[in-house]
Each structure stands twice: as structure tokens, then as C-alpha cells.
Image 1 (tube, rainbow, N blue to C red):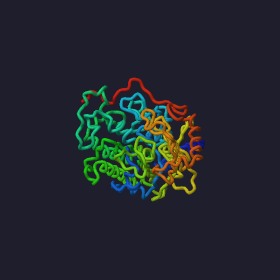
Image 2: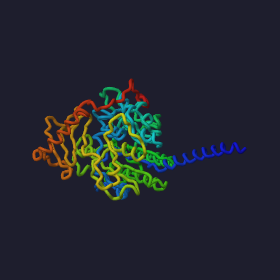
Image 3: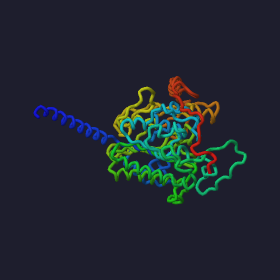
Image 4: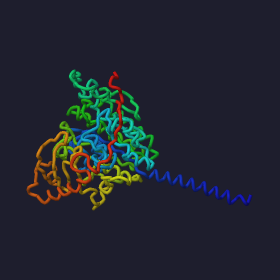
Length: 484
């Protein structure tokens, strides 16, 4: 028996070591922050109170700004798919999703499965991952969220205007549904599907459009509640407030400024419910929440004081209203005008959550935690930012200076023989005064920055720095065209 004591003690020590390791792992997991990104579709820079709205009542976003930090120089892309590709991959959209505009239903192209998404980086670091809302990075099985690092996807595969006209996708709430065009060529777009983990839940009709904000919010709250015992990443890209405008039944007609304002105010309610859920669950001090939009607002939105709208590389097309909230970590009631953007989300979350960035490819974004935390004298994450419209480089910003060298994109150029224009965004955020003639040395400096980029992402078309686009043979609709 005495001879067995050392063996017994050894086994006890081994068991203690296992228990100690397990609790250490649990402690480490408990210390990891949760991440939530709320991404609104087509909202204008001044559509919410923290960025100057006088039309829309947004008390929850006002509270988020009071308790958090405004990012006033946060950049997306001119349109949907590129902006989402930048968020997912930490790269300029042209590098990770080299397309001229956006992706469409039943498309052969999408975000390549070879890309490493923020969901994959965090999942490898022990995170539960979910996307509740709009994807728009390819609708074939190889491109959908569950193949790109997400444990859960509930939502639409693309924009809420992509479907048959007869299903109400081209008419706002209360407007007549247009009659079919007898002269239309081709089979048109397939029915718009609501998906759960790649499976079709239902065909989306007007009543379903009205319910999107509420059902997304319910699903997000359920995910937060179920996963509160482990670190999680929730990506919540709303279809609101993209055309067609469909505020929920509890919200339609409630604002004094029409159905667009109704929908903005419903989105604000959704944000408030997410923040309240975090506080009620004891997760607020462990959760970083980013509120942003995928591109500038359409003409029905308010982009003041910016010039331009969605689809352009003027500030109103790409600079988006963004808030960062993390009680106890991010100083409340503050703001930063440092250059930041969608491509910073992946490297920032990886740094905070213990994820590993892919070492075999270029990442354009940076860890912007110093900017979010308001660390004094923090080194700028970016001194230079390139404005791409599809595959075409339209402008570059370096510090406060922006040189616009083109307008539009190759498929739909907005101007020919464009003369470069220079703006000082510090003193002229609305890009009202071209000062190129008075500052030839600044123009030359920014032109040299553009020239140095030609061997990477270039000026137009596919360039050496572009990575492979995802492609499939024989793409199929998620709901057949002839489905009634």
C-alpha cells in the first residue's frame, strides 16, 4: 500500500493540474470581451441625433453617444457589398472583393472561401459567432455566412429590393405595387428569401418586410442571452433603412416626418433593446458595441454637412456615422476625428479578443483600440486612405487633405476629363472649395502617394494586389423563379 502512495499522489496532482487548467481556461474566456457590430443600410450621416439630426428621434443612439465615443471620420465604401467585404476581411474592398459594383441574386461570384473573415478569426479564438440580418457577399452555399465562420445566420442574403416587383420589393409601404412589365427581358430576379443557416424559412412579402427589424432584434437578444456564458461576436446588419422603406407596424406613421423617419426611429429602438439586454445580463462592461452604416445615405437621407450621397466617393458617399460603446473602457461623451474605417474592425477585434491575423496576406486595416479608448497622443492608425468606387480609385486622403482625381466608376463614369480637385477636410468638410491651384505642392504629394499605390491596388481594373474572387459554376436561386 505504501508503494502505491506515490502513484496515488501523482494521480491526484495530475487531476488537480487538469482542474486548474480548466478553470484557468474558463477565466481567460470570461475575460475576453464580447463584440457586437450593428450595421445599418443606407443611413445618412446626419440621420441620427449624435450626428446632428433635427428630424429623427433617436434617444437610444443619443444615450450610446453620451456613454461612448463618436467616430467622425469613419469610412465605409460607396455601396453595399464592398463595404461588407471590407468589414469581414480587414482589407480595402478592391483587394478582397474585386467587383465593379455589388453582387446580385443567383450570382456566380461572391467573397472567396479562401478569405479569412473576422468571424473565422474570432471563432478560432473561442468565440460563438452569429450574423442576424443582411449578408450580401454571395448567395450560393459556398459564399453564405455558415461557410465563412458564422455558427448562426438568420436574415436575408442580400438587399430587400432584390426580388420580383410583384412581391413589393420596388415600392415603399403604402405605395401601389407596379404592374409587371410585359416587355421585360430575361427571367428577372428570384423571390426574396429569409434564411436560417442556409435553409429558406419563407418567401419575403410586404408584411415580412415590415417585420424585419423586430424579428432581427428578437433573434439577436436570444443569441446574447444564450451565449452570455462564453465570449461571442454578433454581427447585426439591418436591411433597414434601404429602399423599399417598410417601418414596422408599431412604428409606421408614428414620427412626424414620414415613413423613412419611422424606420430610423425603429432602428433606434432596436439599438436600445440590445444595449438594455447587455445591461440586464451583466454583460455591458464586457462588451464592445460598434454602431455604423454601410455607406452614405441616399437623397432621401440627410448627409449634412457632407457633400454627396451613396454611390459616390465624396465624403457623403463613404464617411458614415459611427459610435463605439463599452462602459468603463471607452470614455463617454467623447469623439475622435482620426481616420478609421470598416477594415479596422477585424484587426481591432482580433487584438482585443486574442485572435490571430492571417500571416499569408496583406491586411489594410489596423488595431484602432487607441483611438476608441481615447489614449492621449496615440499614433494615427492611418495617415492615408484610398477612396475606391468599384475598381476605380477616385480619391486619396492624407491627413486633412483629400485629392479627388475621378468621379464615378468605369461602368458609369460621372465625368470625363476630370480635373483633380483638392480639399482641406479640416476646414472644408463639405468639399465646397477646390484649393488645388493654391496648393500645388500638396497636390504633387498626394499624386505621388497615388503613384506609389499603382503596383498594389492600382487606378482601375484588376491590379496586382487584388485577390481571387469567389466563383461557382451553374449558380442556382435560393427560391426557384416559378415559385408562387
